[in-house]
Length: 248
Image (cartoon, rainbow, N blue to C red; front, side, top):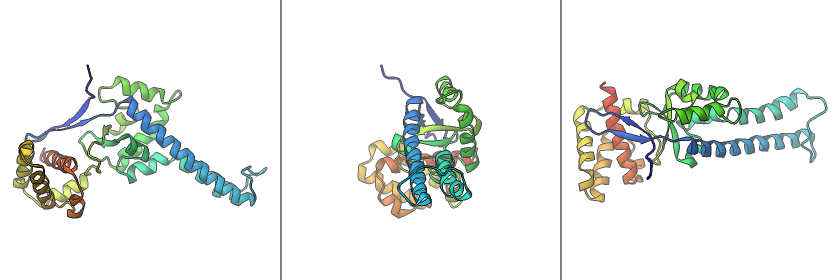
């Protein structure tokens, strides 16, 4: 018997609820391993290039007496790449890293939005605690023990790690607010009605109606032109859910 993963359900006043499956320990470990390899290789690449330039010969050996040029130009950047990897990339990539993208997961708030910079930084600061005593022992215990598979950093930041099934960036809170500031509840109801009738419509009708309504909500027409049915359906769900959150 297969066991369904836990999901984050976002209630909607229109009757269309969004259910986002949450990632467990396996997906987290896979994403972390990929990111660890990437940041290690990047740090080693910088160190190697810097050491070669510093020594002016085919040698990666550090100087016998460390000077400012070595510390600032070679060692510090390599360490920064390794230790600040998550701190920098998650805010830039909206709750993702290259490893998370490959694992098909993303960090989101419990309201279904892309977390703010403060929340993303908070969850990463708590990596120091999650990593204790070794190999993210406390974090792993928290992921297994909590219903929503949240490590200590997620509990502190109010975030979860969800499967990014849409294959497109989540709509963040500021984009949703800007879109809905331009339209009334009628458009939201039209979107909700389209979602209700989605299984009965042809594929061409689904795409055409979805694109028309999403463009009306302020989303980019060129981006939507390349989106498939799964992407369009996901955008519609998120907009309906976000509209409900704005009115509660």
